[in-house]
Image (cartoon, rainbow, N blue to C red; front, side, top):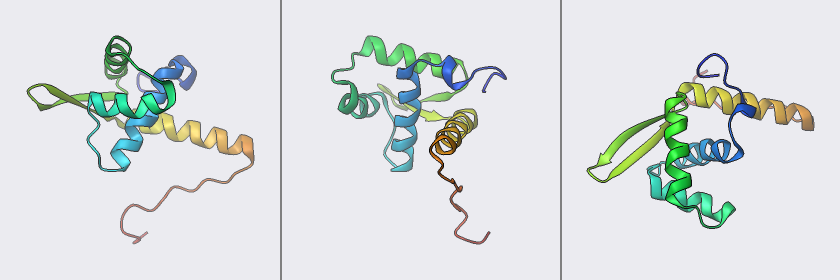
Length: 113
């Protein structure tokens, strides 16, 4: 809930898929710029036009679920905020509980915990 009230179901399915796609790109250390996000989404949706992609990315940024920065003069990179990771983790736990799966957060500090 980035703004204290936005929930998973307040976002469109496309926006939720955008969050998951950006998270996967970030996890793979690939830059999450518009065309990379578009290409990843097209494996699921078929053709995704710019008129659908960029307004939804901008909406996520406005809701504090993403940050937009210049990669170069013509390319913007989109990264997730703590609020978006919290939203994704909450939804993951909800789905796991529904399926009877126990989730565990991975250790990311080199195993010292």
